Length: 89
Image 1 (cartoon, rainbow, N blue to C red):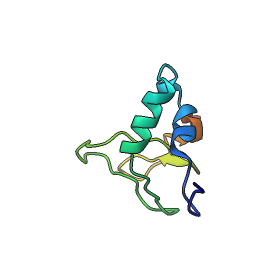
Image 2: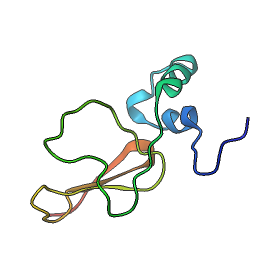
Image 3: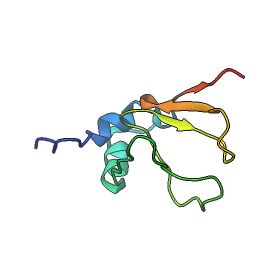
């Protein structure tokens, strides 16, 4: 079945995540079926510091920038395959 425009192949996206390297294909498929895809526009918040944690998020497309609550310099960036890059101080 073809993916709708803007949709990602969730099992493939999850396969690229270092945290899930020991998952079997069946395990990834189960996780993918339970996962909800959510898009966040440029300049908007995916979540805010202090919000209750009720989900685990994976970045499949684009970049997620981590910014302190006070709006200072970015702490780092998160992008597909869950590679972390700390921004220089």
